[in-house]
Length: 284
Ligand code: G4P
Image (cartoon, rainbow, N blue to C red; front, side, top):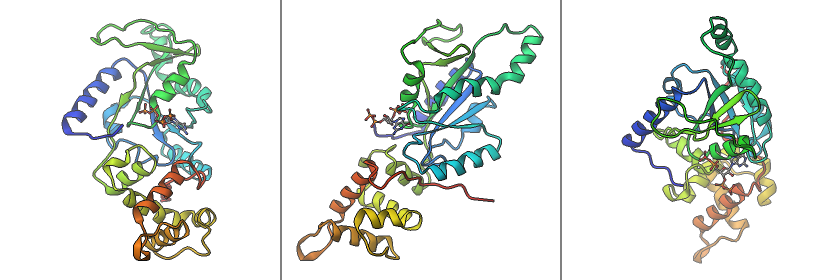
């Protein structure tokens, strides 16, 4: 899927989310563990309008585990509860129900004490930008026992609820947010991790961005994968060196950047360079 958001799309997405928020107690914000800031909507606080939120770092199986650990500390330090997930295998999702209960405990206890609500399941909505794994997670959480608990009053569209465990109900359609496009590096991070398909951006540009990052953070992975004796100072020289090693040459001995970029991008996607993260928390 190619993402192209226009102001009209954003307004519609926001309206849809606002409608869904009326039905739920807690928001599960899904982001890509490799780029937890770039894969977030910058207006999330405003959009979720004070609903309790659980941050889910998905695709953790592809992220650098050490960096993910730093992110968990970072978000916890900001008072945001966070869990690490692999929605493909289901790793980590068994912790979601308890975390959601904890988030609403105080409010529920008060309402119960006042007799406002009877004991009931916590209702949740999954929110995130395209391709972070929302459908994968919903399917995983639904498992084999999708139990539709009926429509809720006040909504025109049919909303279905998926029962998870004994005390959680999840809306079966996620809220789709738009990524932040103003910043060029955000687009590149989303492209390298596959959230934006290549058609929008030039292959070489994406790979140059990735090589520049690896040069500083994962030089040994590059050396190993491409059999390089040393890592050059400039990313473009690195591009040259990899092109040469892989025999991507045009007539006159010039490097075929397009072909080199294709090879490197394929390697990245196939995790030939290992588990990589593209953002690290800045210590302040
Ligand atoms: P969305 O609803 O948020 O748009 O995302 P979706 O679930 O469609 O997931 C987008 C891609 O990310 C899918 O891959 C999906 O399998 C993959 N994915 C989701 N969660 C995880 C995870 O925790 N780990 C890994 N490694 N991948 C994850 P795809 O290539 O589009 O489809 P497929 O080849 O898996 O069928």
